[in-house]
Image (cartoon, rainbow, N blue to C red; front, side, top):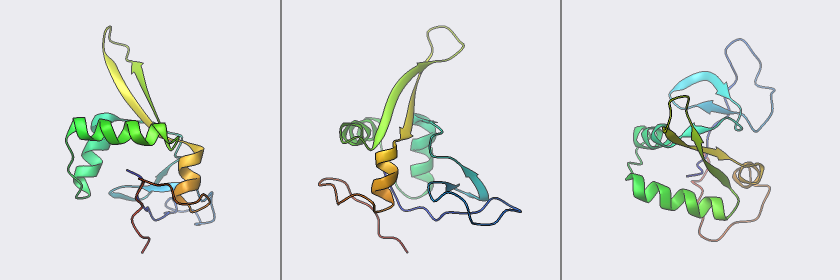
Amino acid sequence: MISAATPLAPAGQSSNRPARWRGLPGQPGRTRPPAQSVTLPVLQGELDLFGYPILRDELNFHLAYLAEKGLVSVEDASLAEPRRKVTLIKITARGIDYHDGRLPAEEGVYLEPRK
């Protein structure tokens, strides 16, 4: 789940910005803060796009594991439509620190080597 991402500067701005911001996959030059949540289908699609196809049940298993370790938060939210629920995933401050190497290695969590 947590993978190495190269920080990218927004178009027209210097790369001197918070280290926690990451480039949007497939959209060089655009960024979003990690506090922004992503839905489960979007995350699954991004993983598939980057060569990590995964079934929804398996993704839920891994997200529950990372949430138990405090690296991501997973919450159910309601949309404006009645009875329509979505799952929102967000990396936590601890997850950002772990990804950036400020925390010791966590057993059971794999980070791809940075290039």
